Image 1 (cartoon, rainbow, N blue to C red):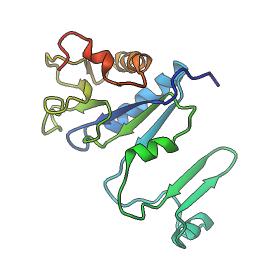
Image 2 (image 1 turned 180 degrees about the horizontal axis):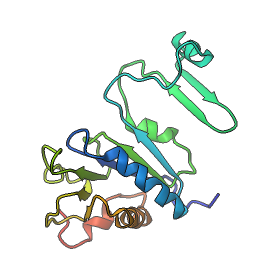
Image 3 (image 1 turned 60 degrees about the vertical axis):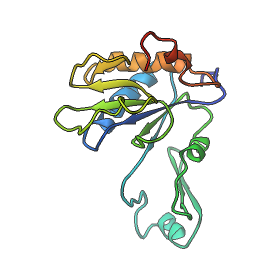
Image 4 (image 1 turned 90 degrees about the vertical axis):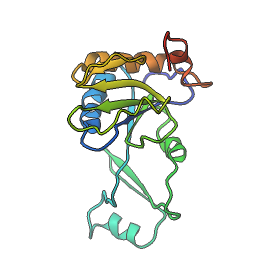
Length: 189
């Protein structure tokens, strides 16, 4: 495994005004390309509904259902940590600290209101609004609609350019202010 330069991973959200815009599809396409560039990528997926990743009746499910705060399921190939949110709250900052220290980039799918840098996915037939106009944490706009804007924008099918942008952003990422690089760009909002 390669040696990390930064102490903490670069966190980038992939957000949209509403579901069905292609956030997950985009992540599926960019993760393998980022890995090809030698980066270790982790993803945090936000779900709007109650979900379960374990099978009812299996030992790990029964242990979690018994009231365990955390259940770690593992074998030689994979592991999953299930944590019960006993206060019915979620703190993305706390979850990020649970991600492996070997990670270079953490992509967060959803959570459009979080304060981390985000890339907006917009589809002209699906999206109800354009978020970057009201959200200064959006660092790029990805769409099937070409518009002239003051932040980097990419065609939704131009995966190479999107990946190169993310790598450039990650390489400019510092511990002080994740927006520093883009504030120096001409026309940054």
